[in-house]
Amino acid sequence: MTDFAISVFRLSNERGYSAPRLNIGYKEIDTNAEWTINCGGTRAYLVRHATPLLGDMKEQAADSHFMMDRLKFAFMFGGAGLFRARCVGRLTFKGVAGDVTWRGQLDCPDPFFGDWPDEIITAQVADWYKAICAQSVLRRAVNDAYLALMHPQEALFYAYRGMEWIVVGTKISWEELAGDMGVSINDLREFKKTANVEGGARHPTQSLQKLRADLHSYTGWVTCLFDAVNAARTRLDSSYSPRSAKDSAAVFARAVPPVPYE
Image (cartoon, rainbow, N blue to C red; front, side, top):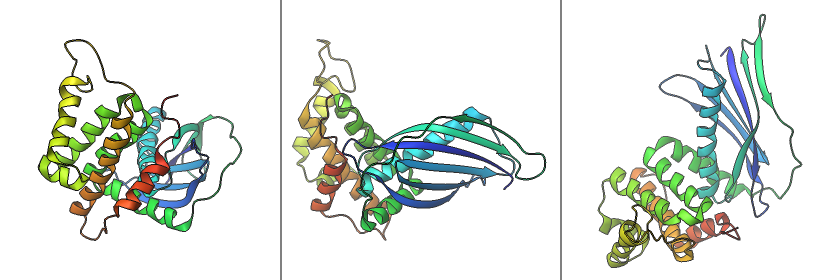
């Protein structure tokens, strides 16, 4: 591979957790471009390389953010916690010897903080990263789970859409989804009614009133979405051993911000 782009992301977590140490290789089937991803502490380094590396700086920036999203989702579902990521530097190189040209966007790093996650969490993050890359259904659903935690005022909308991705993508019924989440179908119907009609989450209300800052939707139904993702992965991957309810609750508790509404 003669050309490559390096993107550096600063990772932060409200609880002070540090990202696990990971080294990941990934190949794009449609382009044959390859990624090398290294992360740990407060940094993630994403290298995309190909011969040639097609696209300009803007395209490389977008691709790196999409790949970083997958890593953030894997942190969350792997039990490392809820992380924000901001790109603090990017370099692109054309060639590795002779007539080498390069350009960059640079920033300054901040100090390391927090304790390293244990080996179990590191293994779980790597495992979920692989699953998220392999299954579009999981990628869409965990994206909405992430957005629900990052934007608590819109948690109802993202929780509903995450569930819809799973129902449509795995071709199950809402009744089956309710069973996966451990709730009654009547409770799920009430949730759908609130999201669609009464809460202003998915559609405007006649009164122009909107349900906002609702902790029940933020905690209860987003937790249900975590359970639904766990069950969906079980359906999609026969080799996956589903998490127990206790383990799923621990993963959610580690991800949810200590103060959702700031």
